[in-house]
Image (cartoon, rainbow, N blue to C red; front, top):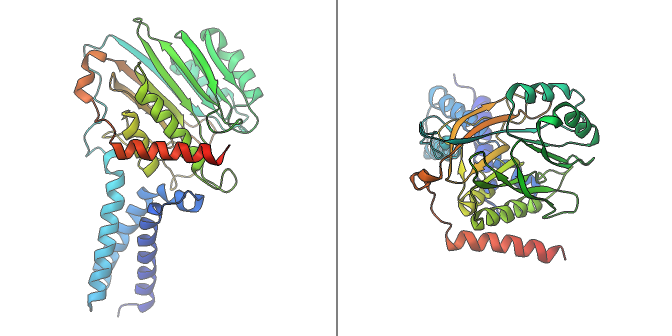
Length: 358
């Protein structure tokens, strides 16, 4: 005998899955809406389980059963479709480095967790990997002091913006930095780093390092600041005369509406596509992990390797990435230009933000 309570529970879960699939597409910036951009991986898995249980445990007795299972299957297809580009089944968006590559750059990025006092773990990783570029976020003065003392002599070029509000940033470079600037695009407490970098072979590239606020009640009840900062940087990347890297903790997943608009307008490639999720957050919770730390690159770059590094006692894992610089091959992975509608959406986002913050 089939359990009515079991079917009722499964039906309730199915209705919840359907609602959670629809909610992110409401046109609002409230955190409790935007947060549902994140768990597509988890929802895909749970929805698939619900479908299998419903098929094998319960009988189909009416059109309502067929409608319900049809909606569940549609939800699964939609949810999995969001994460499919980040699986090994999908094609690479950023091609692998060619054998003829002549110049490369290595990048270590980590949200270190401001209250994390086990700073030596980060130091040990920096000594181990010896990256050309280091970006650390959520750094305060104690973090700056310890990191600078440990590795400062190896990095002659640096931009240090320690803060006690969890939005401090440190950028260290073995390569020459040209015209480095700290900008506050949406708030006088949220910095971003904008600098040109001289490659070993002499070419100049542009780096934007960002760490926008997440849409969470204890941080910011709206996603407006995060979304606007990302749109501003997308426009800068699109208009840049130099090859571009945008790096940092975006506090957003790559498949969200905002991140997709950012990528389409900036014309930057995502190194994860076709290779894996490389979930960097939450390092303390295996079941609730998402890719929040990103490296988006213009088509002059190709990927040599990417690695999610070992635990550093933060709530984020670091990423260590090696990129080859191959401007001669850039047309082989050129992304399409943004549409007029996408450009208008970005302009409207920025204009609305400036109007509301006069």
